Length: 85
Image (cartoon, rainbow, N blue to C red; front, top):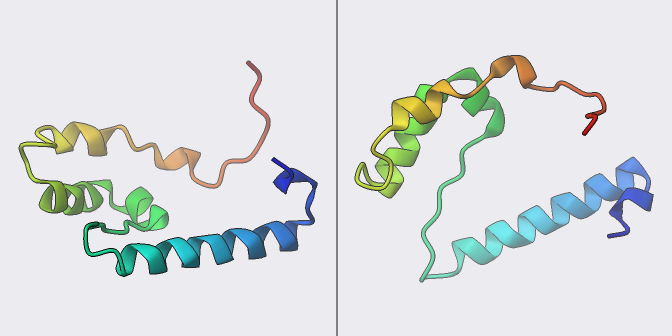
């Protein structure tokens, strides 16, 4: 809850450490299977990312992967601003 009070560099460093710890835990947890899908790759080729998810989870769990891929809006990538509720 205090992350927003940190300098950008401190926040980035802390998030990187947390991500690396999480990846290490996942890699060493025999009861957990996971895949990583790079966000940039998802934006650039949503159908390929959806296909990877289907391959990992199975078509019975993701029966409409083409619909999932179709809702990716690349125009929102790296868009910054404030959202008014």
